[in-house]
Length: 459
Image (cartoon, rainbow, N blue to C red):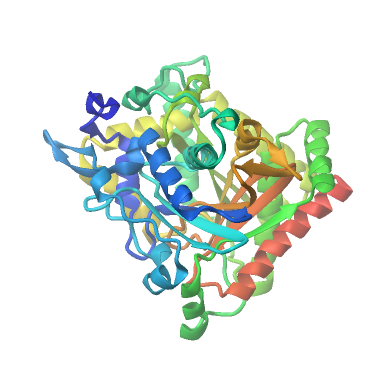
């Protein structure tokens, strides 16, 4: 019996249903990870490596259909789309702009461009079957599988142990990040409800472009996926980490504060400032626990909304301290799990689950999204080794990695940060209906400059 035979059909959990409800033809609930390999890549071996990795992550090779009165995942590797590394073939199709229909195709689409000295590959994931952590683990498996195909057996790296049966309990409390709390569940729900009401009652400020896009400028974005990336160099990144440690806060608190400052300043100059408007950052919060190291790619996250008015943003140190306090509070009251519990209750009636989706489409859900993946991608280097400071992948090296969360309607910019080769990588994508490429690059540069200034001034 194949391992998948004991798992499928696999009922969708409430968060996966929520991801499906959030799907929008113009703003599909998909995200991208793009990596670049330096050196001469054996294309056939790379394509085979992706397929090897897929066997270890069955949700990426599955579709959704009704079964027994509810929606379920079905393992359908026969429906996985061919991998094309010839840009002339896939470019006219703009694969990054087309939604993934999980009723007809699997939750992963792969394309790339192979050259004599450099190969770039883009992975498009449906958020219902994978989150950023799962995507980074999948990338690690591709790198390991490729190395095992091109290196002699004596040099084969070991793949991370995985247990596919862990997908059966992928969003259950046992073994996950759940604190031991005082007070009843009703008390915690009451506290979180107050914060939810406060969030829905605020006026979240959308990010406004300085120059409105035209059909021409928007059309230019159809030639690529729109992922932009920059780095905070090792020396500046070390100073940021030292500043966080000395201030008694997390690096993520600094990233959120500086992004808030960047977005507020940007809207001030573009005319996007609203009366009583607040800058709001959606921060995905991982619910994984220690045992989830062996969990195949799936979605085990929740949402945290952090917002500040311009008056609150005036004091850099106060903003940093209050962001740290707020995130500590979220962990204390199990904010992420209470969000899941609310979805569990709403999912019993599909019409109720659609309410928050309709509400988010009618208003600005957040000014931007910031997903910090930490050191996760460094595990690839630990498993495969490095050469000249770059992760060794068989006969080539991993030159760069870019990853961005999904874009939602009226959330015009999404950011992801992670550590790779001792540097902080910042990736970004903007709404192509709102920002042109030049302005997107300018926005990313302003955020990078803001972080470098923080590293030097430590405030």
